Amino acid sequence: MNTVRPKSAPIKKSKLSRTFHKVISLRAATKIASNNGICKLKPNTKATKEEHDIEKMEDLKAKNRAVMEALLAKLFAGITSIKAAYAELQMAQNPYNNEAIQVADQAVVDELKAISEMKRSFLKKELDLSPQVTLMLAEIQEQQGLMKTYEITIKKLELEAQRKAFSLSELQSELEELLATNKGIEYKLKSSGPLSIFDNLRLSKLTPTHFAQFHQQTVRSIRSFVKLMIKEMESASWDLDTAIKFIEPEAEFTKQSHRCFAFESFFSKTMLEGFTNPNFGLPSAHKTQHYFFDQFNNLKQANPKSFISQNQTALFSKFTRAKYLQLVHAKMECSLFGNLNQRKLINSGEVPDTPFFEAFVEMSMRVWLLHCLAFSFGQQVSIFQVNKNRRFSEVFMESVTVNDSDTEFSVSFTVVPGFTIGKMLFQSLVYSSPVSSSLRRIYS
Image 1 (cartoon, rainbow, N blue to C red):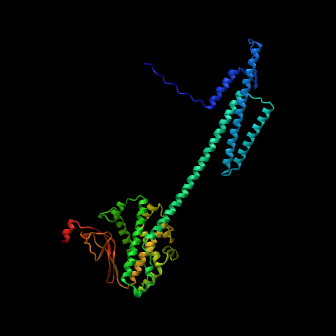
Image 2: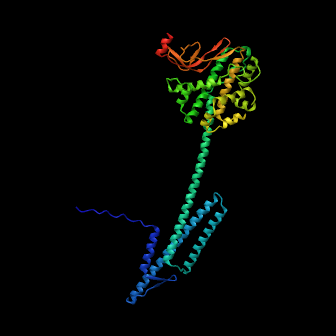
Image 3: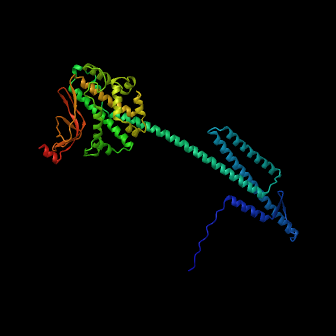
């Protein structure tokens, strides 16, 4: 068999190398000697006069062709330089750079003058140039012009990339603001419900039903804030299971979505701590039931955030600041928001302008109004929790989940404490689970 030899790959020549090759070929073909830029033909003594004339004409044509090629190369190199200078002129206008504009403008003028002078010399047949040298210089000039054009193009692209990045950063900030605003709106829509049902309420007409209705709204408000907090935790890549184990170490959930009740338990217990004290644990003079009822009526229609801003020394303002610092500790705030700005503002008596704090103030207002309404009855107020593994009782408890009536349940943990006002009892909310076999033997 014949061995097939692979064909050698064609070698691509650069424009500069082709110019060198053209110059060398031109020198060999015309057999000319350069003397101060003037080309002289070497005489051929062996040729006849006719052959000599033909050769002389061929050499003259070759020379003229070489001169024209050099002239065109010089012309195109000048155009390339003008393009580069014009691009530089445009670049210097934004951002405005007066010095660079003048330099680029002068470069354009110089090149136009050079082309005009070359045109004048060509028309008057006064061209005095060496084709070889002119070709080389024109190629160098053109390459320099192209390099400058590419550099300017790269700078333009870099500036455009910077502008795009800045625009993207602005849009990202706007998106974050919109998302934060939407969270606040979502919280308000889901938080608790209107308070219009308590309009025109009189102390003499106050009944346990009013407290039960407002208690339900307060629980919904706490639950909405808990959902908002969980979203913030997830955004900050918190390990929710670890946090739940810290709150309720032995809790077991039948559904993944039930984990929020552990956080609700922690929030409600913290917010209701000191509830049985008429001043909610804050130093203050003794207040009557009329005072608490007036507080309820005056505050129920107020904007919580605006009220705190305008009444920094009010008991509700002090209560809200104290509960925020207690519930959202420094490490948690830093983890969620990357700083302690809200905490610093609260400690200095100011009000943070954030959807998160606004949602917290809404919840805090509900708890404070529930406290005012409880003491408006003028009777002893107390709260109670149900111990773990206690048999579920519909008299004292309400399950936050739907229980099968045919199955016996026990308390896993208290979600929201119950209340007693005088002889009135309001159920505690609990998370229940089916009774285990060991507990069933204890109950029996």
